[in-house]
Length: 243
Image (cartoon, rainbow, N blue to C red; front, side):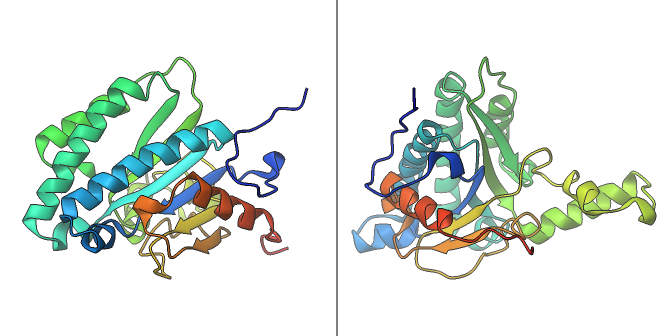
């Protein structure tokens, strides 16, 4: 019996050609809030709520790896203290909720980046979530926090040097095994909502052969139907990977 996946649009998405790994740059929370006369914090809350919806939809349709860019190294150092504290409080609420709900839903959680620089309560909540053992894993969910693609590569180089690996042994596979995404496939598609046309230092090594999809829709409004449009677009691409 043919399995029917719960796609929401009328697009002819091929369930056999789904991307194994989707990367998303969550952009537009602040602009979304300003358009509605709301605080920046309310924009981030709306973005977090939409993220939950997207994760659940990825599970339903069979996406096995999802990476989202939540907070760059530049974001939390350059934005106002009020906004940063609002983000930290939101992260605290999110991780406590994820610890309670997501383990039972089969979401295996990973952090890309240096969250050790965050306040103790946030670090502790993240660590507790990372420790969760799942009975049945349905999706690997990576969240990039205090993350930068260049910083990740520098971190990998330093670890390779610490491990005294000779230059003759260094190749692409070895470097990949020193990145935060070790053991996971590279993203097939990078999605950026919000109307910007840049990668903002996201997964620079891993996205070498990823398709790049840009949308003017702000992240809080980038729901499952928008995600399916991106997947359909991806399936129309000729994936030669340099061949």
